[in-house]
Length: 268
Length: 268
Image (cartoon, rainbow over all chains, first blue to last red; front, side, top):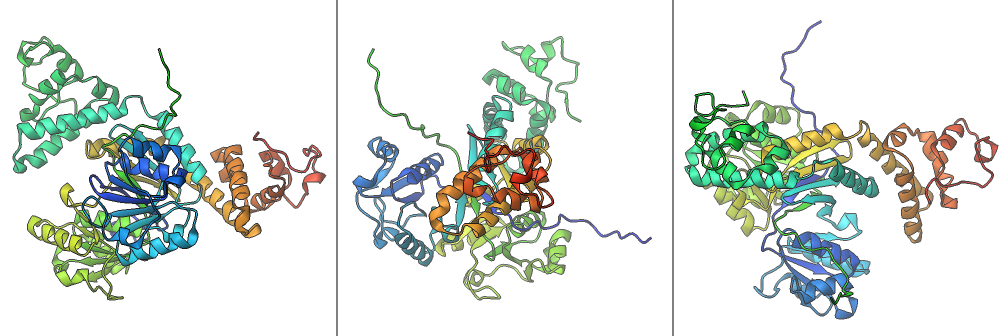
């Protein structure tokens, strides 16, 4: 039988969504409505540091949305939506970057959707999949770690239970471990700021990520991170017990555990 | 000490992204560049059923991108990007809905980014976080199930290893189980199409999701699903062995396993 030497590439698996981490820090999100669904949307976008404006008559606000308004976490416009809201919103009199609609009025919702499309503003009309540029999913959060589960509309209930299951399976402290790795990356970039060192920095960070377990990473103190950085120039990553032995200002060459070569790697 | 009766609402946890399932089915995504990063982006958006246009001189195409072009999976424009590409693109002469840039030319990249912002087109410039409306993450895919892991830039390597770890922990066949639940939902909506039945449909589907394990769900045949639907009117969900006993056209009341009341629930 003839065999082909053709290189294999991944087959396309259609039917999925494009799952993205949208950046809305300091961007303006307009939430139309103030009920329970709106409250969930508001928390979602506040967790991503958006500047949030809620348009809803006071009479329609639920307790959670009222709480966000009273705590100055969001700006409140006490009336129903007006088309001009898509052109000028306080404080900057600019159009919103994103619009989330959660009102019990299909005709009014559709009107907002059409206006958003005319203005090329990304929008989600709750419970109307055909009037959504994007869907929300079930998100597990642990500090910098976010895990989003989507079943692409096949089973929202299952998505939530899979999300909870993953949250329970994950080792405790994984969010902390990621925070530690992030701090190390920032310290390394301060120490070796040159862009030309980027690939070397990335290789070394990869070695670090592979060398320690999540639990080990959580246990690293500031002092340990500073000591770890001393190994960067050699391109090596010490075993954890070496870092522990260096605590209190000991240099690697003063340690019994040190094998004589400055810096040695636990990773090939 | 005084205690307050104030209702507790979730605290805002800033610093996250807004993780969204973007819907780009039949929407036009313009990919600028044809190297390895572009190849990854192209696969991402093809998996979400986008219509993809790649702008890149033939000389700059890597083997995977060439493979997508030869297989008519994407449309190829054999030249460098031109600003007019953001206004009229074949075949519809409309602007793209999304632009992904993956070229080794920071100045040209920045120019595309600025033009996208003028045209209000969502864009991602690879490796330039400040020139991105959104980031990509590490996504596990199993049929309709998508799980996205983001460390919000703190540890991309860790994100990939957590994604792999989750993929290994998940029970085999979970994607199939979700597919089954989706089919059941479609059949139920055909059987009881009235919008007014929405809440009852949703309650029953929740009971179904809670009643069977993922493995059970995978094993349900078409016949089992049709039999399961016979229990909808009673609002109950039968145990799995009842469905199995009904195979071959037996009615519930003919079964030894049947307790006399039509339909009974394994969920309170």
